[in-house]
Length: 390
Image (cartoon, rainbow, N blue to C red; front, top):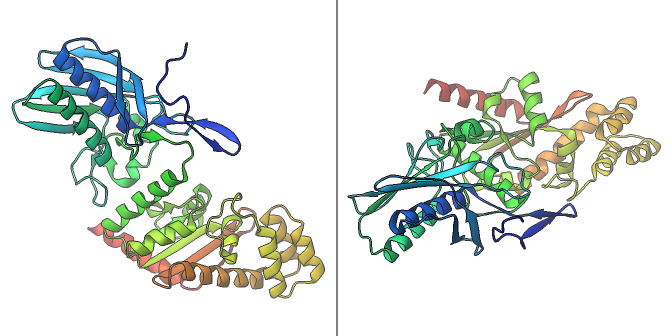
């Protein structure tokens, strides 16, 4: 019989599929710390631990790998990320709780927990990458256990992840300047599958880290294709790119709020053609008007009505581009598109920064760019060289 965790009734519907919830590395650390503290003071083995998450969902988790010393206990909780695709799902998060002479609760990171090496993240330079909500969860559980045990001394809680350094290579941590392991994360204690909020938050974290470390200009691609194209074909600092996924509008909003002075987008036309119509979330479930936008701009560039109708029946942007090229209008159509892309980018950003975009396709390669691209390229390369010298 499958053990109950408290999440059995919680799920999301994503693309008409029922996706079960999971719990965060922060919840694992807090649960392991609570179990270890209970065993330290009560002396009895704790096979399961119950605690409340910030989300208001109570978890009931199995306790693993219990070891004891004279004044300490260590144990682990295995993370279950539910149906969310997560590199950390299945790993074991350990917490060692030991008595100290100093009053209060000290929370530290051990093996496999990353260290902050760059400014702009939630924790100060040099700290263990244990974010404030997991820290608060651990603190609360330790205080409750100490109160129940009438213990007035101090506790040292050391969170460790034996496989953390290996797993971290598959996360954003190396890009963010978090070295040596994973981060202990979670704002609610619960993982909601395919959460847009979580994706947008990860973009914000990476962007803020760039800005806090001195970046005034940002290089953004929607995803891996844009990054790969840039690395192969453009003289730009590939290492500095941020992936915004489909969230072009949110990326602009965050950049405005952080005082960014310029952004250069590098994108496949299949994504960014939508921006030419003011569509700022480029996911197909939000809008898929690629053929309509290409057809309208081809008409503006002088294409025949028959060819415009032909474009409307295409499935991919490359099919549409073949028709446009056949009519000898590829450059004029790209000019129409890039002018409108720039208009809507500026409109979303309230004309508060220098913006530009480069468009390409897998079949046609480079297609066109907005004005200001050369200026942004120079600024980005200068910024990168300056950062390397420092």
